[in-house]
Length: 583
Image 1: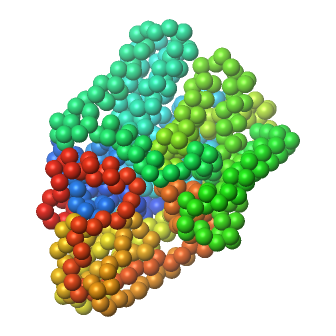
Image 2: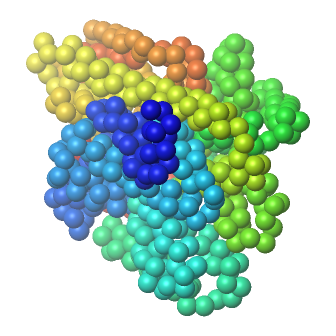
Image 3: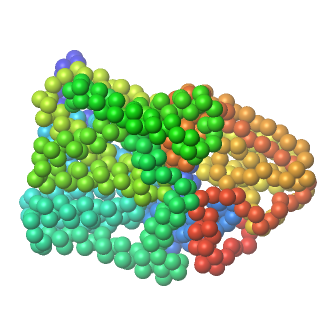
């Protein structure tokens, strides 16, 4: 029975991968909106109503109501995609996640087809990607990353096929997919130099093939012109400036950012770590692990490193997080070692250089150019890692099938646990919003709240209004809700508030993706230096106050890039009267 099933899987790899994707992601279709998901929901709603003006609405995301174009750092293509998904499947969590599931399936099938051209074991390469925490967590959100990855890999598929077959139509189609990738997430523009270098290495000269790079360049120019005309600001340039500004304000050293990026890469692409015994000699593994732990340990032992994470104030907390960080940093070094080993074996091969530049460019951007290290920024390098791993495994003789199976199973289990932990955090945020609104039912006043992300969506869904720090509109008897673990929250003055109630919702998990206490900062290393952290996850605490007077107007909680954002918003013409989100 087992052998027959295995033979069927090997004979039908695309069906196998589709079923695996559905099985892994199906349990998360009802995941509550989490972190930046509400921004994409509101964008999709705006696109449905006003498709020619995707950012033409206001949103309170930083404590004040601003035009959406000053808040988002992503282009609008994901909004059009989810507008279609919402219209077909329904405007709720399940309906929109179904759209995201289709994007995930498209990405997985694209990786398999791409791997079929670049390595002898495409099924292994694709499973290496699918069974990673970065992929599974990203695929359970509404954010634009997996959709961009789908356009990315299919653009590469048609590009390579067009180059090898000398078919200009395929190159032009690849250019159209590149355009869609960059209009989904700005990092998609990296495909242009990446494939340009590949073309020059393979063809040794410029030719008609280079015209396939024109569609994304034309799309970028058109996007700059259109956003300048609509919003008096070229948004691609603004996003690049924002990243540089915030990175400077955060003050992370390059060494710290590099070590954190290695930990995010090793933990996020854990399958490369678990399969390492089939790829490297024990002596090589020992050398890589020992060197990484010694050098990384010297950096972690320095006091300035931990000053960036004030929640990790105790020696015990720093030791626990530091050990996990060094453990996964070894995996990150092993990923980069795959690049070096492949280039060493094939120094003049265009495909090897394509994969090397793909991994190095994505890693370098996530570590040193992006405003923060996060799992989502490292997602684009996963297909290259899977292909490099499969190439390395074949070069080593393709041995140890049992070890490979066990390594993939261990990676899949870890990825599911991390995805479940992120799911639980989203559930807890929704429950805390519902509990807070329920505690305010006896009040006749308006219910106001601070904090954003998924918490904001569910508070607004219940009729509460976000606090606008520039225009105080509260009245005595109103209620104020403040979540402890959130963004852009501040404590009101004592003379403003009266009765206080503290709601505490336990988080039944020992693993987290987004908790400062455990060093977990999957969505931003500002919170913690780990993509996910093992340890006790604190309960979700929400404070409910009865107001005796309006909050002081004109104040604003500090956040990275505040000066840059304020300048951009002032150029938008100031704040509108009133607060909340207009769709």
